[in-house]
Length: 379
Image 1 (cartoon, rainbow, N blue to C red):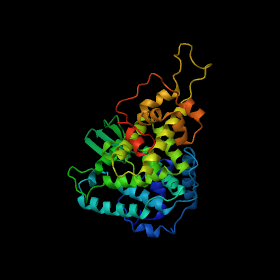
Image 2 (cartoon, rainbow, N blue to C red; image 1 turned 30 degrees about the vertical axis):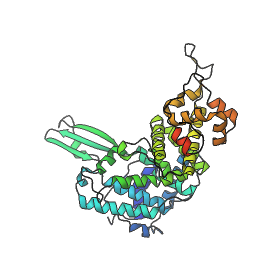
Image 3 (cartoon, one colour; image 1 turned 90 degrees about the vertical axis):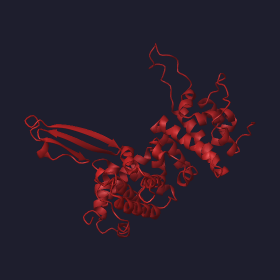
Image 4 (cartoon, one colour; image 1 turned 45 degrees about the horizontal axis):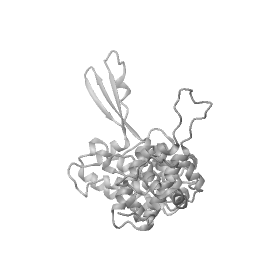
């Protein structure tokens, strides 16, 4: 991969389109040896780097004050390179090449280990700034039928000579858009082999960019969201915790439910420390309040006359966040206000009491409340 190993080509062909939009080029897997040469890249295009950083900064500004971006740090590029290699291995022609899979797995593992966990708000932000485009990534496959037969093109456009004169040569094209996690399904093997398994590598790469991990929380069960050390560390930073909540709320109910399920699974593990349980409880309560406060009713002058009266905002949060809703109901307004450091008047307005709501016998929040030492629950 001599013609693609240069810093400028990787940034311009893969990182740039991933961040700014456009056609992302994925070629043969790259070894981790290039990272040493990229510490001081000889062919640095400052204009391109500035454009990428500005686009990443604009995206991050939508989710909160999570840090400034002035360049492309090598740890973020190492994660991007690992994703390039994983995407390269989703091509049908390399699925059965066990030797290449094993080598790519070793290369990606080395890149992930080299990147390590993010230690600052800026590092977390920069990683998500570069990788948030993964959620929009699609591979377009084209099936072409013509008078003499058919041909399939995976991730590339068919040659113009093949599709010329469509009426005369009876040419028909059918395009299929394959989203990211459907692509990553190609990394799974029919027979489990730890040396060839790439799904664990993909999960590890996601975990090292916690905000990207949250943004893809509603992914398929094979790579289901789970709480990891980098994700839990994010909860201890006010700005990053708020960014994670806004990312989840933007994704919708499926992402919120996936994270709540991950919390229930984490609480069942005996090794979960009390401090982590307390941060998880605060995170879910704050997310519940954010969703409730964001659900603004329609203004009276613009509401159709036949429309039914608006329900309290908090009633809409029960379906998307049953764990947090139940926890708030059991704690009461005063305790929720103390846990979230919010004025009690705001909590009362966001989470109005429903006197007709029965207390469930098998509460989903009891285990979390007990582990967090937030409430003594009689059994």
